[in-house]
Image (cartoon, rainbow, N blue to C red; front, side, top):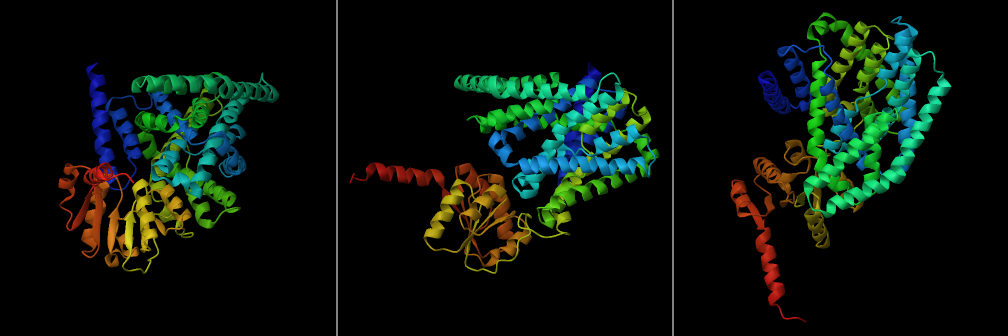
Length: 534
């Protein structure tokens, strides 16, 4: 028991320290979880062992991630994405399998089964890393984000026939026709049950639990739905994450989708952390150091050819920048490759040494992927610049204008009033959805962070009349306010505050002017109450 508590303590401590250090260096905190898993596995001597419980718990991180993706994709939206999801997804998986199979079979001289298994596994990308980044960065709303999400969803669906094919290769008693028939029947049963009886049951359960006004009961109902649908799908021969994804799609058509997503966000992130910790435990440092040249060579070769295939597919209907970002985002080898290699090794289709080598290639790919996606705009800019690139703004050449930071409810009202008065203004926000909405309204809006000097220079803030902060976070108000004042003493800084405490915290920003929300609302309420009725 003491050793277990010590392992948990060290895991949390090391993960926290590494994540903070990496975050400050601009590196994804996911790498911190992976490195923690490697360190702990060597400290406690379970490196290379199969930690079944840890793997199962970690897998539910992906389950909850796919559930939240499903919450954003109703059936209507899936139909509108059929070109992205089906055509691009099918082309990506089939062409990647073909190209990688040819590479493995001819230049490397692997046998047919091994070449096919490598090709199938390497054709899959990392749902856990890429979708997490797309959601956090809001890039999921961009063209490349939509394309990447559609292909990732198709890949998750493709895992099912891939695992069935491996089972078929190891079992000569079953014909391919029997396998396909069983799969089709199972899929029909799962979809029918979930979208008929399941949809009504889910809606009734959420409505009942919401009426109790007990948060823990509502959260328990959500967990029951996610786990129940995952078990149903797995019991019919599919992946856990597919069942969770369909459950999310069902809830997307209810009134509870936003509340459900916010309630499970912290649990999803915790489980994803456990998943990446489990990835770290699979790293054999001694084996990696002995074969580092070959591992990196295979990894780079697979990434290059896979990226080239994806770029060619997306370039058919999109610009160079979108195609390049999609290729960079999806070029890595994903977590489902672990399941493919583990099953192939267990069925003796590939040797245990080959399985270990290929798993290590996948792990290295997942370690380097956050570095790629966090710099995806910089990498894609070598192909072509485009509007969605954060913080890269063409200088506007204006003066005497007003800069509005943020475009939520307050920002929209401020912009509407400024437009009505004929005042020149521009909008800057780090929420891409808000940028797209502002541009639809005809406003000059940009995607970026006003606390960064290149953005301040591009928006000509030193010649602006004022900067109005409509953001809600006190941290963001301070960050932007201090950056603006350090850049120039010229513009007025005006912001809304909600409490006296907030005023005290922000009064160090030189020359800032505060609008007290409580005071203004109070004045309006008294005015309305005391004015004679007309």
